[in-house]
Length: 303
Image (tube, rainbow, N blue to C red):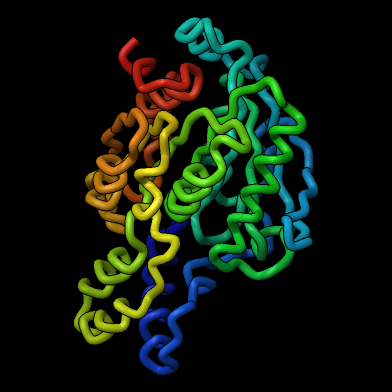
């Protein structure tokens, strides 16, 4: 569930094969496909940034990029417009960005690089095992990584609203984290692009697209569901924006609709276009998302 659809497809096939061979029911590391090599840095996109060293609760060393608001780079002054949308929010929020399951923050950066020029500071986290972060990516251990990032933002910007933005499996991780930790870290809103509701259902959908996959479908019933996002949706009480494309062939739009209908807080929906996690390639989607983040409210989308 990353920048490339094949990442989830390969992992699903491996999960199925290993489940059949070993009977293992805790293969969550196979949801993740980390890469240590960086594709690009924010500087290559003209963005000032800071390397951030974090430590998870279990002692794992983590890496993130802090990219501050860079309003001077904003040619159309959208940040000022966004702030006028919600004059009650001063200053604008900071965003904790959770990327998809493949590669690292350097390859996912383009998805959110438009936010700092619009006045939104951004902390892009690499989960354990990704980029310069140490350790092995496992559920629920990666939730400790998100906790370390949220704590860093809380300590550095105690008076700024906090929005969590997740894409693909990052959106899946964001749901239980916000459900369990929103009050502790002062999380004010949640943005989800192409979120999975049930990991095993995503695997079954991928398997059903080939005759070999049909043989492996029974193995998906052995996949653990403890951290399925939909199990935590009802406990999410902050405003939620869900973005999903009907054309998504990696995580079907029905998954996003399930989460959208099950969250307990105010929820709004944007129909994106194009392939998996390509929503922010649309200027209209960016504008609506910026309005939501700035206003911390679904009502901001209609203003």
